[in-house]
Length: 223
Ligand code: SAH
Ligand code: DHB
Ligand code: MG
Image (cartoon, rainbow, N blue to C red; front, side, top):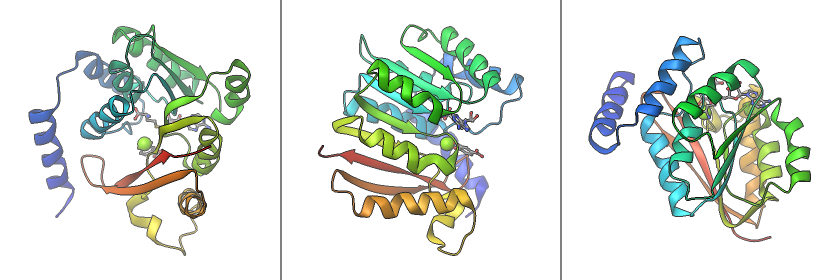
């Protein structure tokens, strides 16, 4: 089993089950042309995000980490009328690429990209009363995943979801001796959730075109 077969299977799944989306294809092209790293969710993972948005009937979504807008466009596509997605991005150049792609994809009316380190954007969201959110997708700087999760937990409605990408990190999640700060943060997040009665969560390991990683899904159960 190697990367080649994971990629081949991802292509097969994409070709058989996923809808064509010119806006998404254009977003990938624009991101590549602008030199952004190709670290957006894979198409099958993106489809899962869409299914989750639909399953919870999400109308308010918060995303940490916009990159070129790929996951934002995906989720915005399946928002019901009046739905809204706010996406936080530290890098102003990425945010600009994302805004153009989001506009081109026809979802500019329901997506807002905010520039700046996500932690600094949170007080303004709070003041505006931007929440409560139905779904929060955490996919920015991995050392802060537990901090974003903490903030999101208080602002996600009961029955809502918090999804954190890249928690498995090539399997290092299972290694208590790994000194990498991003890995330590994912382990800490899991430890935190063990004693958290407001959340029921699991982590799913993934292989695919983007290698070996995984995501955590947490259902918010109480206040
Ligand atoms: N969700 C995107 C991928 C995001 S990649 C998709 O699937 O399409 C991670 C992004 O987080 C990068 O664009 C990076 O610039 C951004 N980022 C890194 N540190 C951040 C921070 N402190 N606040 C907000 N965004 C940050
Ligand atoms: C990285 C970030 C991601 O969100 C991802 O899915 C893969 C890699 C990164 O920062 O390297
Ligand atoms: Mg990611």
